[in-house]
Amino acid sequence: MVNTKRRKTKKIYIDNVAVGGDAPVSIQSMTNTPTADVKATLAQIQALNMVGCQIVRVTVPDVEALSALPLILRKSPLPVIADIHFDYHLALGAIEAGVAGLRLNPGNIGSEARVHKVALAAKAKNIPIRVGVNSGSLEAALLEKYGGVTTEAIVESAKKQIDILEKTGFDLIKVSLKASNVPLMLESYRKLAEYTEYPFHIGVTEAGTARRGSIKSAVGIGALLGEGLGDTMRVSLAASPVEEIFVAKEILRALGLYKQGLEYIVCPTCGRTKIDMISLATEIEEKVDALNIEKPLKVAIMGCVVNGPGEAREADIGIAGGIGEGLIFAKGKPVGKYKAEELVDRLLEEIQKLL
Image (spheres, rainbow, N blue to C red):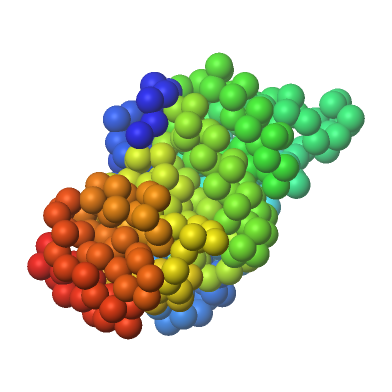
């Protein structure tokens, strides 16, 4: 469990999802379908909803995508945020369509007057705006001022955009400071936290493919959450958006910030292991995950007599492996000893009893 006191932030709402304040850290993703393809976009949103995504973002790059928004909004099971770049008219159209939130990039949305128009329209409908600063699209003036992409440039960009929104009396704001460079991202959020109490949307942008991007995201997002920074999050992967939700949940679970579903404790194996732990653990994880369990459940899969019995007893359900066999524990008590080939089915039977 994270012991760090969470940063005090303003609570806002993305439709019915609270962000900031005392609300749990929410999980977001973004569709990778053409938004104008309503059928494909809604199918992906539904898939995200099924795995526990709480907020979804769709890109609105053109009039065709904007025209698709009303139908998507009517049928989406999740609050939808419109991602807007370059053309502020698209932001105004998305507000009129009834999106739950906007993401604006201050580096490319245009003049202060345009941002003012968007803010006033959003204010009239209580639609939050995310100031989405990205290291790859900072304002040219800031790049020249600081000699490139720096923490100072990123933070100044965010502060400038916040000030513009506040001049209109708009305060339904959340902020993201995205960078693919983890130390740069971390330091930017830390510095901005000294300036504002608006909630933070955190993540490592362009983190990579599922394997490398998951690690990079876990380091960056996990570090911020461990310091009490972060109110909503997205794991940005070059993979299925559904994979992003799995990784996000596991980051939160590792920090004690997500209690639902399965927590696995698995022996890494060593020369003492006398059972095929890797195959056993892989099969158990696949079959137990397929049960879609939401109840908190700790599963231990251990391979030898050193830590196995102790870890298995501490879990809700567990296996302590032996020589071609294993002992199953449920709620700290031994259930029985079974041959290796029987362990998976026996474990699944015991899990069903706990549900």
